[in-house]
Length: 192
Ligand SMILES: Cc1cc2nc3c(=O)[nH]c(=O)nc-3n(C[C@H](O)[C@H](O)[C@H](O)COP(=O)(O)O)c2cc1C
Image (cartoon, rainbow, N blue to C red; front, side, top):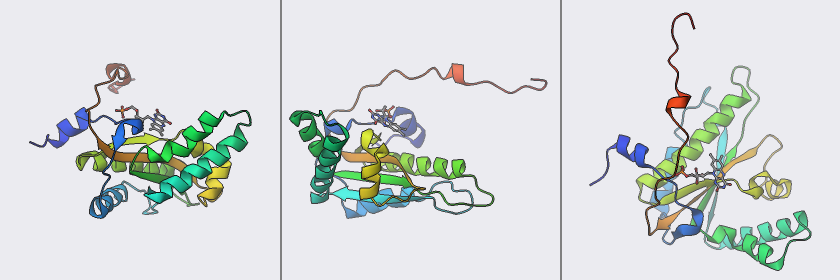
């Protein structure tokens, strides 16, 4: 039986990219994930995000770029480390890069547009989970690397909000410790 939506949200856990396997979402499921990502709160109807999809051979090609850029960035990198970078995108059958693409707007601060791209990331994660896949929102070093940004044709205003890894998995992840919720809640009272 499917959990209620509130239970689904309360039980959600990321699945580590290294624990993912085939199959990934099919075309129809990918379309659902992207439409969910596209349907987030968005002040000013700007749509300050875009998506880059990595599947099949494209993951290998991007892995070659990661290996190359990593070797340039870290000159003393071992062969093992470089090979690890080459394999990074092979951890999952599908990776969606969510790009934050804010525009100059008279009424909508950039901060709000960045938050909206973050919401798009979370909707990718939730939609993938809802379809029975594992998902993990990662940035790792290459989200912040200028050479990789160039390779992905990011403009100077754009940033990677996340690389969302999506795939099947065998074992349900166990719960992890979480920050204390009560410490983070205060009721505003008159006279505060
Ligand atoms: C913007 C962002 C970037 C993240 N980048 C990484 C990362 O590079 N490496 C990592 O291990 N976890 C990263 N995480 C955390 C994972 O996505 C995930 O939240 C974590 O594995 C905990 O699992 P949970 O979602 O079940 O709480 C990132 C989370 C966010 C929101």
